[in-house]
Image (tube, rainbow, N blue to C red):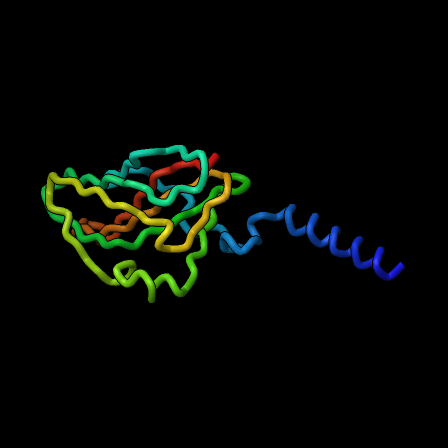
Length: 160
């Protein structure tokens, strides 16, 4: 009897925890603070080489283009967000990634005016496995504008 009771409780726990994937270890519980992001803003545009993957990609190639008459600063760091019930949720990176992949934090590059750069986002370096779903890469650049310097752009992709 006790064994049957434990099996029922375990089964119920598995069923209930699978009903709410936003509370899984993969994403934060709260939605991302900025839900509306486009692929271009104030002369900066991001495009992905591939927008659909049959399984979790090991890397994602993104091209960032600056059509302005001034340079912008950027780094290796990027966010990944997953769409759930029409809202974006940040994918959690393990804290150890900043120790293992040191270039991920405070390195800076210059994207000159009227130029572009291709970055490779290595998910394998982050020990990140993306399950099936809709995602977006979020990139922040620092550009001199009249309303501040931070520009955030995103590019969507899916994992089948």
